Length: 147
Picture 1 (cartoon, rainbow, N blue to C red):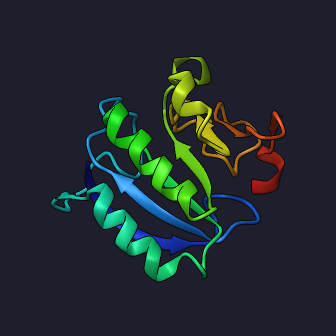
Picture 2: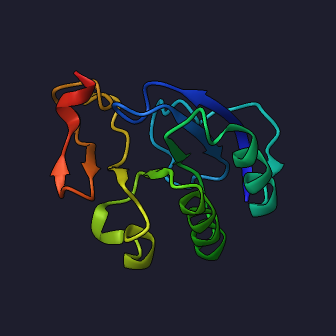
């Protein structure tokens, strides 16, 4: 999987300390998306690299989030399985809609953000956003936690 960056964040997943992985290659081209004009060279990030990283940081985080991009179904599934091995929660940010996400992937997720970024409507912090943040384990939309 090609990625731009990896870091620990406090805002992508409410109530979680999250290791975020920014995935390269989104083809949606949403106007003014924060990743639309990234000038960072992507680099290869493997499941083995994820496993090594989680061995180092799993005691300090509660969730792993894959942000956007173009992921290979099988690579993503392997990485989600690796995350679950550490008893961590999983999240995926995508511009796709919930029904577009492979059921096998969805079943491995605790959280998912769906919906294209529409500049005029704003992101998850906006009351008018078209994007939806789901707590999949409780089948609940939790956009209110971003306000």
